[in-house]
Image (cartoon, rainbow, N blue to C red; front, side, top):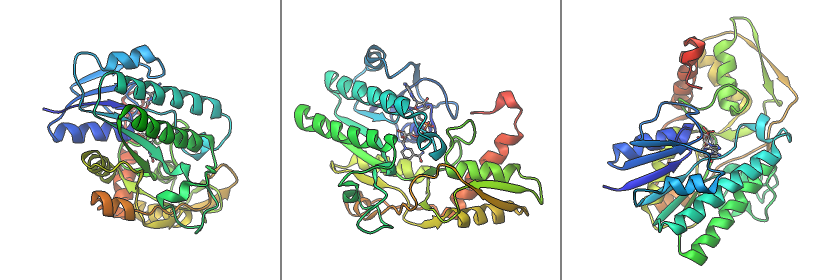
Length: 323
Ligand code: NAD
């Protein structure tokens, strides 16, 4: 039986990844500060702080791990990472976690390390304004410090691969949606914040949307994301890979989709605020060619499942809510 250690296992994507690994027959140890988004299915769980090297070292005790997945990060949506007021924490917390995990992997002879990078590594100004091919990340100019930290860690891990022969797999996630994504509390991303606003608005009411609605994004369903992680880990591909959808939608059209799914009548007021880059169009040619992976869940279904989850959460008594 293969053994996996998952950092960030209490979070949205980490929680879904643990479920998938268990279903694939792995023995899984989870590691997180807390259960951010759901109860865990891991065989064992450590509630510790990965900024502390000794705690990270403890995570490797007692077993030899075939695979380590590093998804723990201090992150959130544009109102968190583009506001400018959390930058020191975002950068220093995540860089400590990432360095601690990489060093422990080398020390404990781990065969493969997965790292979750982000679409935020891409600069606003690209060769073609609407595309994010993997090579478009250079010349580097991420529009926030979170993106700089991710790009730095990509490079740090590639240097671990060269110097210590640690096998590293890096995926750049592009706006992952689905049940159990953070939907309140200040770290939620645009899609979940919009779904929450639509779920809460009274018929005939108004929702506020940050920006002017013309920003474009792609949204990938979480089980497709996890399938991409697994395909990458099972491959011998050591170049960075986008894991996202290539179906582009404007924020205004996304709000319209939520409106039609909810069946509600409401107005929209666009307000100033942090939005992140104007356009970000994920390209999945490399993933398709190198690891035979493509998204399979259509955007409307992904949005419906996310919206239904948030509606259910809103109805729960306060103390029972998962986040
Ligand atoms: P999440 O916030 O739900 O999960 C991250 C987890 O990391 C949380 O449970 C948190 O408690 C944990 N964590 C933070 N600091 C820690 C520490 N010091 N020690 C131990 N655990 C700690 O986020 P997510 O959406 O599941 O994202 C997972 C990974 O994917 C992150 O690295 C994120 O940067 C990356 N990513 C996510 C998206 C997305 O759309 N969700 C997009 C791009 C990249």
